[in-house]
Length: 391
Ligand code: SF4
Image (tube, rainbow, N blue to C red; front, side, top):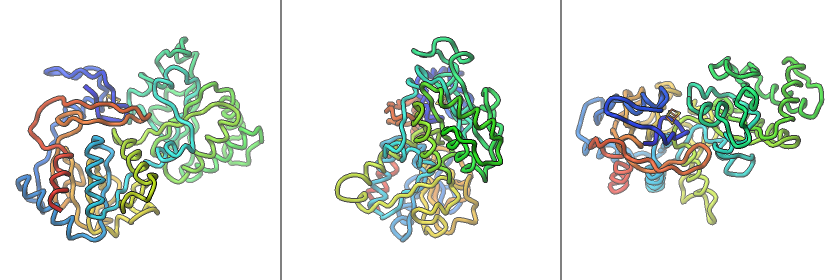
């Protein structure tokens, strides 16, 4: 089976009667999760038909609608969600898709995960901790495996560097670690860019260490920057500038380590919608936010929305409950903090567990996601199609 625990979409998982082989701890918990929910309207359990009808009534009566999430749904559900958003005039707000947009716009160079395994000699983990978010990244692609041009093993062939506000688990295995002040990330980037031009940077950070880092990066044959959520917030443009500067002296690629197993797919679909000839997606507004604090600066502020539909997304994990004033609809396989606050909760089957479909891996590779077990639950595609029929 394919694990949908994160955007690596590991395809070597074997699920037995009582065990789950090859999956990491996140994947194992995801695959074996029994934390499911019942349909709920106004905190009372109801049947599925009533929940879907109540959600439809909210959707047709609302004026400022925002759909959030989409990163934990198969591509087919995302496409149906876009159709529904068009029909009811909703804005789609995705979180942490900014770096995908830069990649899709061609603002930065990227590569595939097998290319990382085969060629990468310098790897930077920027604002991310894959050991806790994409646990098999290092063992399958980024650090430990031998690749076509990296035959001598990680200790000889690869240099791993972490640049992060925290000393993370990933930092603990890296040769070089730069712990930066979250409020002075751009200062660090600017200092590094100066150092890459062999200028002594004007900074309060350790100049000698930054010059040493620049020296390592300039010697890279095939460098890869993995950027996480800590890098998709305000310094995002700084990352594009840094990538440009790195590529003046060496060859560096950027990959996003965003949360959600299928975030790249929704970024691609919205990108196509907004870049096709003749308009900006038939009226579907969309905005992407780096942080998830509700006022992203692009699109409708979540505080102003009178209806928020969360598709496979735990909004309350990022936004306090008092920040929400509109009605809330949740479509999710599992109980979340948000589902406890929602006006309508519609449980759905989980992609790759009890629903089949397709997904796009973090590097752009399309992966078929087969069904692992039958459960009788409706998929999110089926739920969204039913909503589409009645609104
Ligand atoms: S690394 Fe991600 S896709 Fe692979 S097993 Fe772990 S959670 Fe699943």
